[in-house]
Image (tube, rainbow, N blue to C red; front, side, top):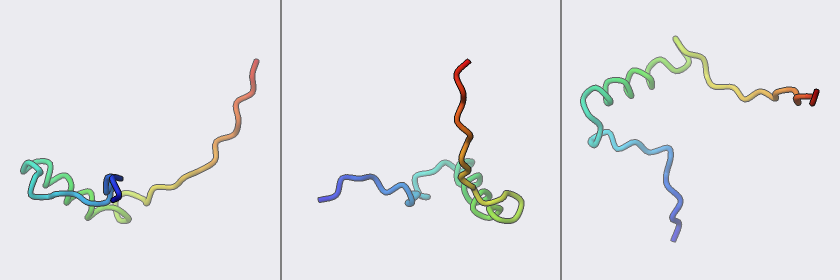
Length: 48
């Protein structure tokens, strides 16, 4: 049995009205108003 939580599933029935509105808005604007997340390498810090 896999006990790892499913982080891609949102129980929309469990959300409050305002949380549901925010969630649906965020899903609608990804790629339009807001860019897709990007992972970038950060240069290593040098010790002083």
